[in-house]
Amino acid sequence: MDARTRRKGAASLMASALAFGALAGLPAKARAALCEAITTPGGSKESALRESMRTLWVAHVIWGREYIVATLWEDPDQTAVAARLWRNQEEIGALFATYYGEAVGTQLADVLKRHILISADVVDALKTGQDGELHESQKRWQENAGELVVLLSGVNPKWSKQALADVLGEHMALTTKETAVRLKKKKADDDIVVFDQLLAQARDMADEFSDGIIKQLPREFE
Image 1 (cartoon, rainbow, N blue to C red):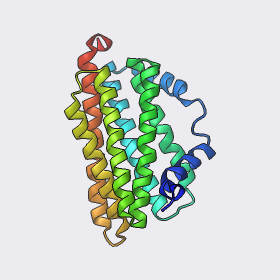
Image 2: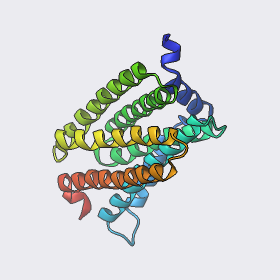
Image 3: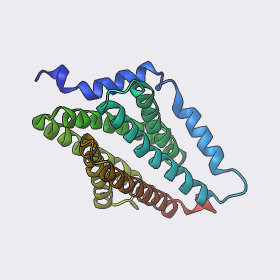
């Protein structure tokens, strides 16, 4: 299998995102909107953070699922879905930038974008039944998760490296399982069960991130 074929999934997602204009200056706008939400009267800053964090990580798995479905069945909506999934990574980066600065937010968004690109390769390898490609893609996925662990634990020691590795590993395992189950067309019930697990895990992951920010920066929430 040549190099171009090996990167079919990631290249397809990248092309779709670029074609839909997903990279056009979003972070600053997203960050401004999130800052406004956090400081909106009528709710505590803590509850606003928790709601924003949950919204973005739940969106991460919802649009990830939509991309998986569109890719597996070659749906023409794949371009729009890829663009929205790509934008979600920028939105997550923008939320973290609110507390850790734009440089950290941009770096986080970039690492998450690579997470998405590699996940596209994982989906493609599962679809085509290429075990070698699947192993190689999952190895790169783990390395990418390691980058996330180093970045996040570096800016906030309240997030332990082991806890981050565990939560990211669970997320990737469930995403892989979801794709594999989805390929079995007669297993709709199993697909729903796995997706419910992904949603619950996304909410738990979001809460862990919020807890860490609140513990590290208590004055921000007074």
